[in-house]
Image (cartoon, rainbow, N blue to C red):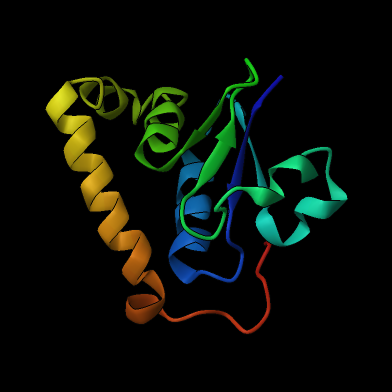
Length: 121
């Protein structure tokens, strides 16, 4: 089973992050799913979570992670980003990553805009 990561397909930052990380996922360990189509998936039960506020994922062990904790797990899944994921286990690093993530997440539409239609390609 793969990790399933939920991203906002109308967010330019999220879309480009998905494309960039997908290109590094040589072992195909991550399946990307847009929150715009979550009702059409077996993961519709997540719709009550703040999916527009933070990236969410369901790990292959069926654990639900969000924000910097989800990014850490994503990084650990890929050879080139694995060292960054390991560094994020340091307590002050993950706290700083959560604060940075929160700032970027709340400002992303102001900084990067929003697509009028979801982008999936």
